[in-house]
Length: 366
Image (cartoon, rainbow, N blue to C red; front, side, top):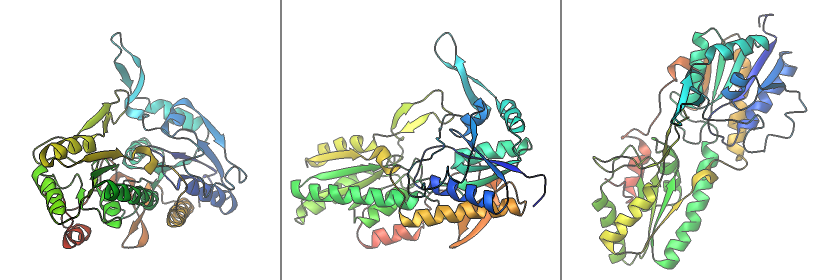
């Protein structure tokens, strides 16, 4: 490793997910003990870079955090350096400004030789922009949505699937007891990985994902057919980003000072009302919401997050900056961060899991 690299920063950006602390732990410990580097924790993602909120991390700071959910550094999904809200105009609308120069100034002031950026597609997009301004970065992919390009798995996803599965199992018993059509809305934005996996794990009768526009009549027919066959309930897993053929996604709110202002949500309630009107079956909707992101990571995610963090430290040691660690064909690897920025990995229509779902009679909404 080049002698000029003596101090690195580490940040967690975007939404929280289980396993973030596992990465912080291994990066800090390995960088301190194996590479002899100083490690600076950046608070609240890119916001900490913008506002110069950073602190030295010691081995004691990262001890006993492996099993803890969330992130000890904090995070935010509203701090895009190139489009940062700095105030409001007379009508209350946010005023945006490019504050990248401020970030670079703070990085130089703190004498950071590079950054480890842990996050999803938004964080990698921000890292790619910093790379263009001469700031070396290493990317570590995280998201419960499993939608980052060029990696078949992100830590946090398996824990979220497990949490969603446990919730669906509980609702399954209620649906059966009350003879209802029960819809459960899961996160994922424009990617249906979480809904597809949890739906398969719980034997959902209908799985609705963004990649396959649904037809209301197809879903209603499945509910009617089950009722005729004596199956007096139907369990439906629906992704927050799902939309009907030729229709639009349901928007819960617009956060005007965010770089990604559209917040999806509410499709389950819309569908529940339509199904009840068409079938005259008692129908209920449940939105799992942020419960899917919280809690302690399962063992698999603890190991995967540690593996990703260890790879990140190796990249620093090898001076292979500006890459993101990935998992491809079950093996660790790397790709340029710029190859990931601004993209989203969605479920392909020929994915084997979709064929598997159809083979057991699961309706995919089409």
